[in-house]
Image 1: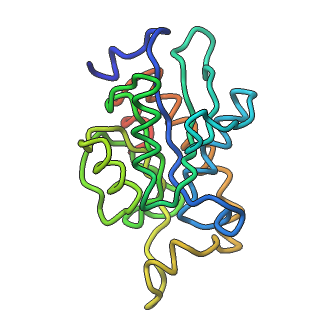
Image 2: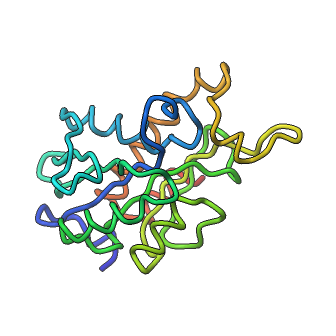
Length: 200
């Protein structure tokens, strides 16, 4: 089933914010997925609650009146082990991988920009790698939020696990809002129209 066909209210979408749990990681570039799911939860008017599996926090609702059910999820495990909780949620809510959206940071895209895609490799991203391993496929949607490459000779791991710069923090709310809009568009309008809008 294509995303263009996936607009009926009876279907469920699982939207996963990739990140590391706990306040020590909250402001890191690697945690953009958490920030976007926070924005989506705010739009849905509901707080995150512990799922009965105990392995993730979730919000259930709809992003638009009459739209499909949406489950926002923030796995409680660290980035390299979040695939298990995602698989458990997908099984619980009976969600096919084609109805899963992963929101994550992307080194190869400039800060402030987005790219939307379906499927592909993990490009060294441990969260995507864990999801692919647990789901048995990479054929899920990705909202890729650009963070750019580290300056100078800074180690990549240090860069993604560090806070946004002062200048970036001023622009970050706009990127978060755009990414939330992209998720809504994917669910409502499908992949092609979303790519036309956000990948340009």
